[in-house]
Amino acid sequence: MKFLLILSLLPALLYAEKPAFVTQKDRDTAKNIAAIRTAGFIDSEIDDLHAEISEHLSKMKKLQDLNVDKSSAQFLAHTPKPLKDLFKKDAEGKTYAEFALPQGVTVVDWPRVYIYDATAFIYPKEDFSELDRIVFMFKRTNSDGDVYVKEMRRLINPTPRSQSPEKDEKGEAKQDTNSDIKLEFYQSLTSDTIWPNTPIQKAEPNVVVTLHDEKDILPFDKQKNIFLSYRKTLRKLKKLSQNRLHNLDLDRNQMISKMLEF
Image 1 (tube, one colour):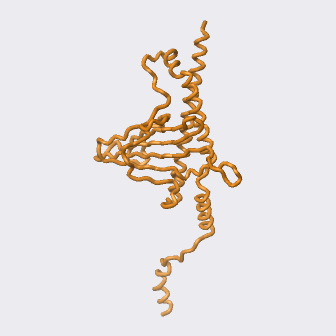
Image 2: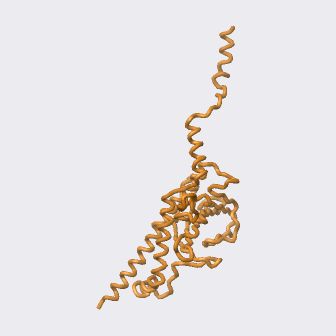
């Protein structure tokens, strides 16, 4: 009888819920996450990228002041129409530079296929000593189906510092925590919705999240995803600004060579 009783209870014992317990790995992971959130999302590579992009914009401004871009367009490329300025003004009158990020088609969610378009808007400070604001704008829409869904995401860093203006207890500059990076999400099911390709949007975002908001802390894996996406896109921007500066330098050297043709 005892044997039969044990056999009858065996399935329940096999499939019974195991007692919950925390491993040392779980404890260490929780401590690391807490330490990162306390210190902020500090990253020396991001600081260096901010500094390099800021330097590129500063040098571009100096070459623009020397009229290098328009002179080369006129005398080298023989462009008859006026050349667009390197730096633009937004709706609030602030100066920014625009860079086209990669565009094309994505099949990540196959069989869904999306057409995407991406742009970067970079604001320098008035004296071009440092960056003031960075806006990465990503638009996409599905290329097939009965319903076309337009989406836009904007990754914004309102304070892209290479060094924080604040000082610590030792009087040294604090590192930028990047905690105020924001992610905005827009969506529309109507075909007449057009979000202009400008850094300031009149439409309000459907959802806004902050990388690290004490009042609404995101899951750590989502925080990490936002942070890594920002750093990855920043690397692309650094190459684009470097190439634009390099082209301006080449134009200047070509102009000098042309002037010496006698």
